[in-house]
Image 1 (cartoon, helix red, strand yellow):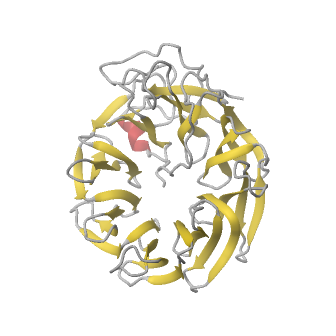
Image 2 (image 1 turned 60 degrees about the horizontal axis):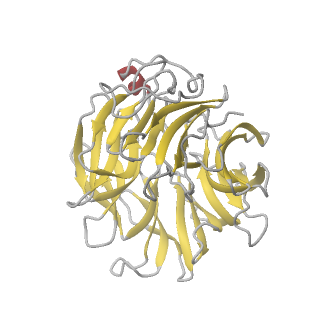
Image 3 (image 1 turned 45 degrees about the vertical axis):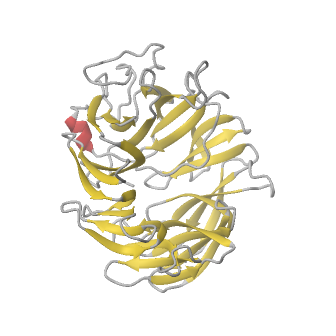
Length: 441
């Protein structure tokens, strides 16, 4: 099995990971004169001393060991597109303010939207992938929910007196239309017409008992379910047909009961109990959750695939083996046929595994050494190329300063290759933004 060389990692380990945008259209590849290729680079392990191309990049690149699919990543405030087949990485732009860690691509892959913070407040920016030019789209935006098919941005903002508003932003004019107020969490359909959110039951009292609502552009909200004082809620996903959310006992946001709301009929049904939601397909017909096979032991996880039948019933299928893993995160491929799971084997070693969901078998695995942790990861839409950041605290440095390396794994060829590292960049974090030739969320 492909194994990282373990040079860079972390003695600590992150908990839950937020989902990142996982696709990038061919425009980046054309802009960089990339040769089309499937999967990631099928080259040897990264060289011990990566070469530096000062003209092209402020980060260290080994030109003989870079991913063969288009990859967008950032180091500190600088955003790069990787080179392929020996080409150097290209600096696209450097942000004026610190990133807030939120990135979304437009459906055509030509624009990356991101959020910055600073003394003068949060801002939503748009950067052109081809030219690297960037401009402020709106003020006060702190999170991007979705970039819709028609180029609108659905975002959470703090521009009014309520804690957060759900806004629809016209990216051409910067005009903002409030869709809902006092919003804690939100999801939105691809076209932006339907959205679900968790909000205070009384907008005049934003810290009051909450409730789950369904909204449509141009119409008022529909109350889906009240949330009691002893409960918490997570908004999971929405399509024009169905809306998924989870309700959990107060104090345990990761294990609870998953509900499905039928938008056409208004019916509400419980579909799973005592689970933690991990990922869902675009149509929410397939959902990955995890359960704890041994009650009272949250360190042992079993990944379960929930598949919705034509009758509306949900079938449950175990994925992988229980009793050996602590699962941190999972992602579904675009066709929902493969699952990528980040777990800690026996509570010690981080491992990335790709499962064939038809058989439940592991089709790819890379296991890191015990001193190395995966700080973040993403997969291409077909789950055949994985990007992951390894992390460790170097000896002789201040506590909390970690070296990070961005690696690409080719599932078919079972190889790991270096994309970039933060060595020599003053400890600035390295994070992938997108990988692959297809625009998707």
